[in-house]
Image (cartoon, rainbow, N blue to C red):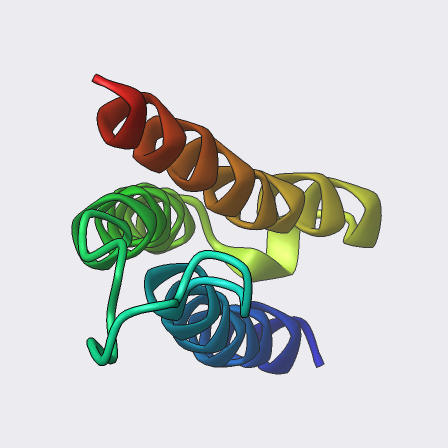
Length: 99
């Protein structure tokens, strides 16, 4: 059950990261007044890279610490860090976009 929580969270948050990246890179209707598909391509770098760094750090943590010794609360808190990397990537993308 614990390994399913960890692997499932990494896979599900990876899919969500992909969809969020596509949404932000494509821009909204107000931003996409050109014929370009992607008006903000910097989000292709920032969001997935921040998520990948978070996923690698979490995967490394779980490989060093056995899952059988961890509580469910600790697993949920550590997995929350992976979801926290997505807004960090979004904020980084906005910072790059404005400069």
